[in-house]
Image 1 (cartoon, rainbow, N blue to C red):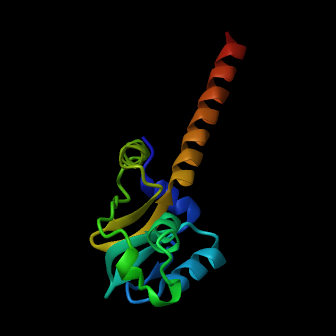
Image 2: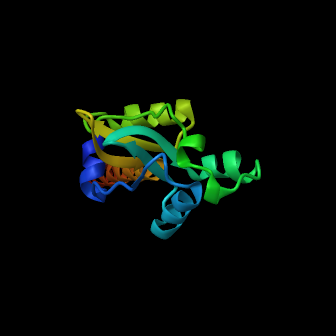
Length: 143
């Protein structure tokens, strides 16, 4: 069974963070510069939320709020679903599907270790399926 730590090892532990006091404009700019869909909101080293492109669209743009004068803390998602590096990819996929979320921070012993997106999970599943197909094709050739 594949684990989240394998995804993190492959993609790296780099996680982009922002404080709840930063402006939404700063958050959107950071996401745009790094081509990412979310930022983990950290206050004094603790994960306190997550802000996603969807949060910006629904809680700022659609409500015609001024992104430069709206803080991340005002619009972030506070109840963050996190996983541990020892979580299986299958478990994570199920949680992401049930909760309809696309980004999950990886936290071990209170320390932020990485971020897993639905794209990472899909890529891992694709690798498993490709490997299975290869094994089945090799078996058929031998039969």
